[in-house]
Length: 244
Length: 244
Image (cartoon, rainbow over all chains, first blue to last red; front, side):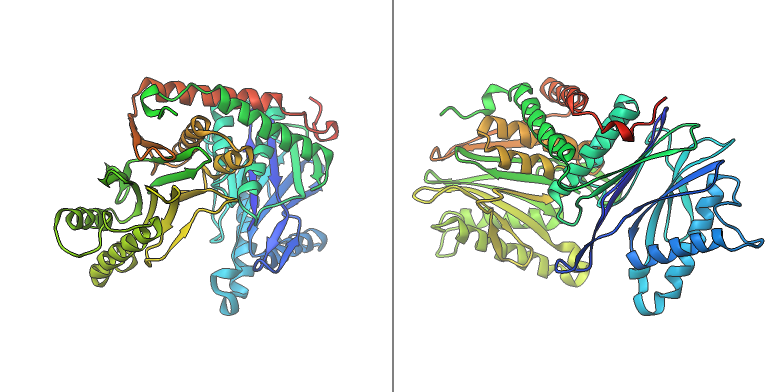
């Protein structure tokens, strides 16, 4: 499986993806699921993917081909709004999946997150369904998840409730990822992070390797603090605690 | 849906169930999913259920009927080991589901957690599958979950890693429940807690109501401490943080 998430904050956008792929437990691989496109100085896009790896790769190949070939056709360079980019990706995604549907059926589908900014429009994150349609993240719930989304959802709800900034959101994204990877073997490092500050039209990217000292430190601190947190919680009502 | 969990610790057993049932979002109810049976002074059982509410109730009715009617038949009073109780419940569960399968198919199945102690045997928790077979919780992973198990799994893994005691385990169980209920509308209060100290042959039970001051205090403390925890985590590597 996969776990990708994106958060939209007042200051900017945070993207995080794992890299584990598997076709059965005896066929586990590492593939990038977070892809950055900057086809012109006035626009930057992040595409995250869950579902069929083959379909995703073919979609990305077609995105690149559309950018590299001249002509009147639509591409990430020609769209003028993020929602148009979402529809464009949705169309490619659907076409690719349909071209393999006879052999693969639903197994050929992929789900995408698209985020970024086109100059003059507001930065945003959108979920692109296998059917080709899309939704924006909402104001009340300004994050999106694809893949194994349940394990780490609580952390994102928490960030929303607290209205955190970009730095804290990055940490929350990583703890959401660690909680997921800890509970589900099909999600794992390395992790790809991209952080976007609104209006900058530049993405900061980072790959966090499985053996990175930062990841070890973060993971250890997260566990230690969580246990302290639990220790500090109010005691259960006395009548429920059996005496030794 | 449902979320029930059980933990087996060195000191004893912890059980926690939500009470929300739903047959569509416009048909939400509150039903107990944690049931205690003490058919004789030498034995105590907890049964937790997920899946068809109708099947669960019929199974529990038959468990009681078997205890109340005299004769040579098997019941929770006659079994001499927990695994026999699991097989007994598995048989009832399968018979009930099969009796409704023509009308309902798989929708009539239920999954159970059975826990407790029979004097002379060690306390344990077992998962009883709809097919009638069972597994014990393992030494490496001494907890069981049924229903919406993904959201709160991380907290239980954490308890295992830390080798916590009965009191802390109770808090971890509740934070696991709060994380689940926060992320998934189909899980909700009141919550039923049962705590068993090994060898006591007595269960302490508690219902935590939605409006209980304890639950409000716990929920608030959990959110506050978690945010502090995130604030205390090591900073992201500087090259990933876009400068304002």
